[in-house]
Length: 615
Image (cartoon, rainbow, N blue to C red; front, side, top):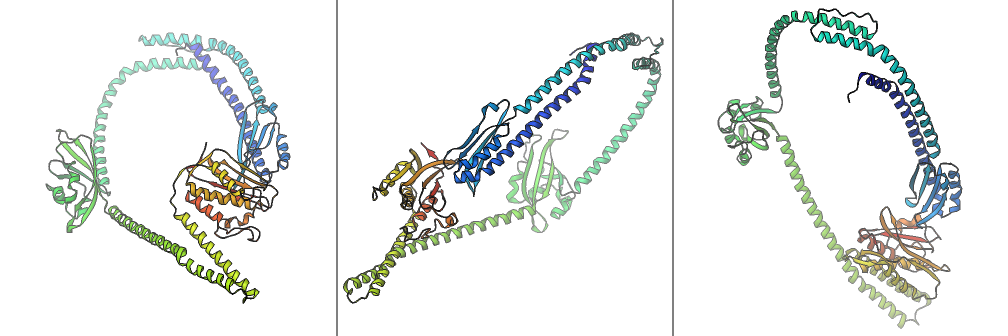
């Protein structure tokens, strides 16, 4: 951009005076605006934290009226526009408060999950508006811009007046005198009597005129100085040679061994003095013709063939590991790095470094031996696992066959005693025999249950698409067939599909639904719900009832075989159903857990990885 002096000076002064103040004021207002936004965001986060802490109990107890006072207290802040509390278990809005008339500026929304005892029970969304604070700052910014415009107008008039009177006219005179100097009019004196900076410039111009008169006389002196500079250059070259020697000694004192070689002779033309300690050979041996072909290990010579080939690409770098034969037959591992360049005659010339890597190679060998050792250990553990599996199969065979025979014998003889010798037996003897038979039947049932669990563990999984909703409907029809007159309210979500083994999944669902029915029979109406929900991006299926429930302190024993949370006199069963469901879900790679309270029913959740699909 080409500007004359007047607009350039005016522009520079205006920018120099007004721009920093304008930028500073603008940045101050922007900083104030950012401070307001930061404070608003901190208040926003604080209010969300208060809501998360205060809504744990209402969400857990499903008591919306208990959380409404907290929401009203937060809504007393005029910046709060909307609060929404969602219940994760019900999948809907738990509480909602909104005042849309407060939306006058920029709004922000923060959502936060609410959890208790390791379970996610809901989430809270809080919307905040910062319009009140930003409107005041924007008004302040408009007032500031108006003040800047007025200041620019006043400053421009004052600058133009001072510029014409104090700068432009004196500069015109100064330009005329400079033109005289350019035309070699060095004999005319330049008079300046002003005391300001332009007067100093004029006097400096006079000094320049006098200096130019003396310049011709000083040129001869400069020629003499050039001769002295040539002598100094010779001294510098000598110092460079000394520095090169010092650098060579420094390289030769390290572990890196420098070398030069001729590719057509398979020998070194230079090698660092450290090479003597590497192989315990004098340097004269290293310089002998055919050194590499004689002292390079026979199995590693193929690595050196490309380096000492007939044709090379200038600048090509070679790097490989090989073994050299030291004095006494010892093998020394080295890493050789080299590059090819052309010398002054155009012949290829090799140079580079080599260094000892024997210690590293020894470590690599030890690591390889350790890897083989680990492979042997893994193979041994695999054999032990196979043996354990075989022993488990033998134990299963014993439970299935060998233990049943004596049980049947005891049961048979007990039956004979009761049938044939009943008159000779008193009441206590008959009761004892009945208790023996009952214990035998219980033991046989437990053997069957254990065999069933073992079967679930070894059963092969055949994955296919399962309409889980239809399967639950079939199971419910089967369970309710025995009690058709029992009042019930059973909710089953539609079109839930998974990937799994149909036979095993049906067994697991049957046990869960049968438990929900069994522990709800003391209620006037049996209420059972089957559905699914999304938790952390995964589909989770659940079966909920409003039956007897259980104490969560006993949840760790919930899936233990034959463990009963309720007395057998109150609820029938053998204590194996939940264990079977747990074993089947685990075989599918999933997880099953429960949430309950005594007397308030129970909810059993389970997920099946790879089956997160709902049509």
